[in-house]
Structures are given as C-alpha cells and as structure tokens.
Length: 207
Image (cartoon, rainbow, N blue to C red; front, side, top):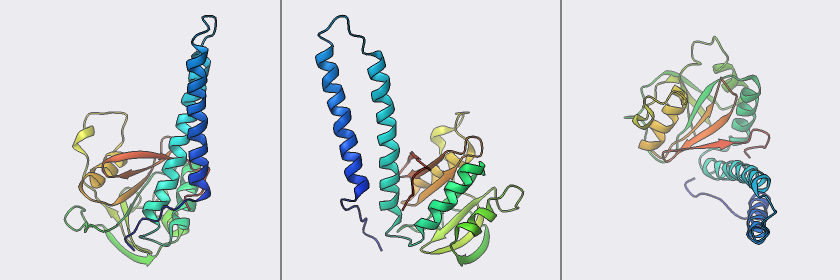
C-alpha cells in the first residue's frame, strides 16, 4: 500500500479542462489589451475565481491520491470532514503513511477501533474530553485520540493561523503523514502534507 494511484480519472480530466479555459481567458485578455477602451479588471476577477476553484478541485483529487494507498476508509473520512465542516466542529486527523510517528507525536488515549465517520465525529464533538487533540489513523483503524503534535515554528506569532493548523504543518514538515484539519471558526477544511496546507472543497467527495 505504498504506491500513489493517480490515474486519469474524470476529476483529473475536469481539472485539465478548467486549466485550458483559464489559459484561453488569459490569451483573450492579451488580445483585449490592444483595445484602449477595454477594462480588464472584471475579467481578472473572474480568472482569479477560476484559479481558486481549480486549486480546490486539485486538492481534492490529490488528497484522494495520497490517502487511497494507505487506507481503504477515505470515504468515511470524507463524510466525517464534510459533516464536521457543516457543523463547524474543529478537528485534527492524522493519517500515518510510511514514516514512523513514534518520536514525533505525544501519545494520547488508545482507541483501537475500526475507522467510521460516526466514531470520528463523536470524538470531535464539542465537550468530548478527547476533542482537543489529534486522532491518529493507521490503515483502517483509529489508533488513538487526544494526541499532541509538534507545532510549526514557521508560523509562531501569526494570529491568522490556529493551533490545529500549526500542528498539521508541524507534523507534515517532519514526516510524510497527511493531516486533515477542520476549522471550528470557519468550518473550512484543509490538509497538511510535506510542509504545506491545501484547501479542500467539502462540497465534493474526497473519494
């Protein structure tokens, strides 16, 4: 379970088509610049919106690619983060890949149960004693909850980034783990991977 499966799925084809549309729009703007009476500001705003949409679609696609070789339960993860996003329940979910995390994560409370969206959602329900830490997932099992992750030094002092996001970055900077984050302030979902954060469109299935 260590090969990333990113074949030409319908999602990948849609992303490529969206990129072609943006390129075409940019080329049209180059032509339009020869017309002194034509204002490009509105067109630029639409292109920016298209870029954001493509970015989120690509994040969903590659999230699926990164998860699929390491867990068969990514549809359960998809339902979980979509429900949590809708309710604005904060969450931090670590999916272990190839690297050992033993020396990076302060252990929490053992769970050792099959991964289901309902169990994950109950762990992160506000008021649950385990909801503040990170849940550790290995293959198809919830290993533990209330784990403490290393924080990214890169974002110390940045008030716009919460502790969960700094923790997602911190672990992803030190390992190949993938870390899902749900913001309790906005409900937005993102994932940390290889030291970067990527937004996820919760209107689309991760699987």
